[in-house]
Length: 459
Ligand SMILES: *[C@@H]1O[C@H](CO)[C@@H](O)[C@H](O)[C@H]1NC(C)=O
Ligand SMILES: *[C@@H]1O[C@H](CO)[C@@H](O)[C@H](O)[C@H]1NC(C)=O
Ligand SMILES: *[C@@H]1O[C@H](CO)[C@@H](O)[C@H](O)[C@H]1NC(C)=O
Ligand SMILES: *[C@@H]1O[C@H](CO)[C@@H](O)[C@H](O)[C@H]1NC(C)=O
Ligand SMILES: *[C@@H]1O[C@H](CO)[C@@H](O)[C@H](O)[C@H]1NC(C)=O
Ligand SMILES: *[C@@H]1O[C@H](CO)[C@@H](O)[C@H](O)[C@H]1NC(C)=O
Figure 1 (cartoon, rainbow, N blue to C red):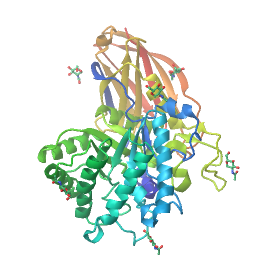
Figure 2: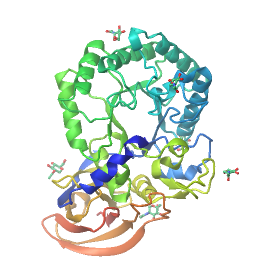
Figure 3: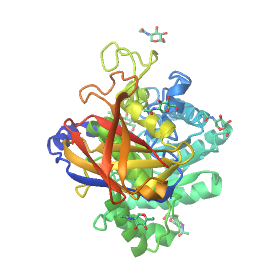
Figure 4: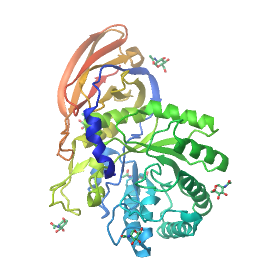
């Protein structure tokens, strides 16, 4: 959410130019596309059907995540009393119902329903203060009862607490969070076994030197409170998925923990939410088979609107902004997710990023349609880099000849993420001669916004 937005200009200024060659191994089938990265946190209006259906279905909406954050008084959550809890719960329940309408899975944010949504004051209570858990136990009792009373028991994942390693959301000792973890985990298993759990939900990616990670891993290993999904956030503007998953695996093996689905349920800083940055994140998440939800950098009512930057509407970001108004249009990044979900059919193939990890590619091969498709992305930087396709003969092409590649451009505007973009630009077909069963072609990344898709016929 919006508090860390100030960091983004720093990271944008330090972005390193992309160079080198990203590779696509056409012989290596990595499974069916499931548009793993097509989720977002908040962004759903609390009024059902306010954003037309096709925006959700076209981008392949797969995962939602909310808990009534920043709903104003009288909707500030549990720590302000039962009425404020109920009003906040109504927001989250509505977002849950919208998510299920599109067959998505919903991650319920208990910390926001509690009221620790980063707007809480310095005297706000936290679960387990002074060793007394009764107020938290009553919160869980109320919430479980309300979920069941509303039939809200399917398609649910529970984040036990969001970003306890940041004082915006958890201004208490680490040990108190870990005790809450064990307590909440078993309470849910006993009284609400239909739900899945996710954790540790740390702001920082896994590192063996990070005691929030290691103390939690050590505890859940001994306590048996292993979540259904391991989740964390990638919102620092640095780090990458291969490194952070390798670090997770080191921690898992140190503490004897099993593999689980990985969910990066907040990814990309604000500056990365442009076509090239979005495609870079898609490539990163798909490679490691991690689910992903776009971070949301809006606040207050706008946090509950705009699908985390995938749609815009009149007066967005101005004093005339109308939270319940309509007139939605697609943004630049919407076109990236639409292509990713709707067009990239068949099976995925293995790819490798440039050695500086600033240039990446997601690729699919559809042998029925006889088309291979690439969606490339640079991490909001400029430079000249290359794409290398290997193993052309494994998709029925000759080992030498001319490969005719059809290019589509995704434009955007780094200064206005909510500008309307209604489609891609067809840049036509260019033939690349090749030999040795491999072809390499250049990418001239002259701005840190634009990205491209490439398509060519298979045999
Ligand atoms: C490409 O994929 C094939 C099949 O999985 C594998 O044997 C080969 O090592 C891969 N090549 C590269 C360069 O990754
Ligand atoms: C959701 O799934 C049901 C059952 O598979 C299907 O009939 C419906 O069309 C799906 N809805 C959407 C929005 O994908
Ligand atoms: C601070 O927040 C708590 C709820 O967490 C509330 O009871 C209290 O009145 C607030 N204090 C001030 C000064 O607003
Ligand atoms: C797990 O930890 C919680 C919190 O400390 C504790 O209440 C519970 O008894 C523990 N369960 C097991 C099986 O160790
Ligand atoms: C906001 O939009 C809603 C829905 O279109 C409309 O009913 C309402 O009058 C608008 N409010 C203002 C202040 O324009
Ligand atoms: C994506 O698929 C749709 C539906 O088949 C098609 O109309 C559109 O032209 C395709 N877009 C691109 C860029 O190929």
